[in-house]
Image 1 (tube, one colour):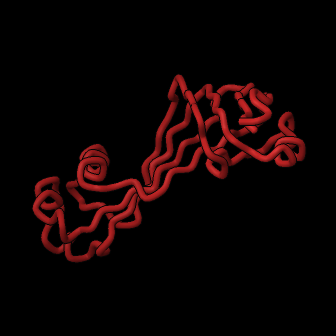
Image 2 (tube, helix red, strand yellow):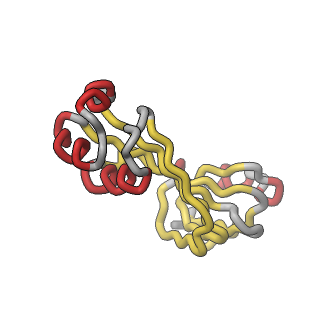
Length: 145
């Protein structure tokens, strides 16, 4: 069935993307953004970045079994993982923060923004998670959906 879930409080949607990039395919660009040859050699073969964005408001429509809907305590939710269900539609608004975390040491002269741009240009998203934090409003919008 199709269920619409909305946040009640501010800053309650966290979207986390897991990015990866093979270092061998992008050596020249890594050197260009500030890694030295020695720093490049110390990098793992597969570079990964975890990027989290926080939104003040959000809503999502998902297909979920009726029993999951009924078992969920929507008003007393701590964290609900929306990505465990097929998403039909979603809208997140008013971004209020982001954070990047890398599984490697940044070069001394590498800027965080340059590294973020590099991963977005040369990397790929491996996985994405969307969590709704705090009390939620949920309603069935299509029993047959």
